[in-house]
Length: 160
Image 1 (cartoon, rainbow, N blue to C red):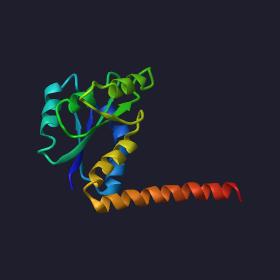
Image 2 (tube, rainbow, N blue to C red):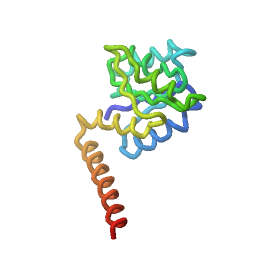
Image 3 (cartoon, helix red, strand yellow):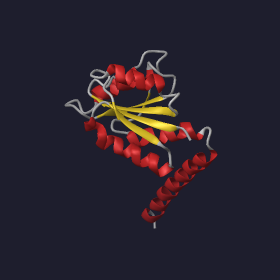
Image 4 (cartoon, rainbow, N blue to C red):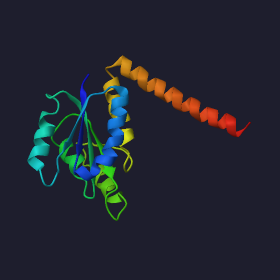
């Protein structure tokens, strides 16, 4: 199975990244975690992105706050899907990071999840991998069924 790259702009993003790590571990998806800054270590970030496909990655999850250029800079240097996670890290409550992540120019897409939404980023990464992995696809379908059943059970309890 191909792995997922989790790249943070700073170690302060780790509490948000941990939610993605938990999901990937739950699904049995291998991953690597790195800290590369779009601004402080642009060459290291570029090298990671340029070599990600040959290094066995299926996609990259990029977490960054404030200016949040990391996902876009990685996407500019790879053909792999990049999933941006804007991190709430400033007085603007993450809106700055959200806009920096989602407003990509035509031709360089970044899939973007909610502010601090790394669990959804991991689920999206799993869905990408599951297009070629039936066992993983079944795990994801089972998880959706369980979530639906939990909602219906709560509805039944509420109305009984």
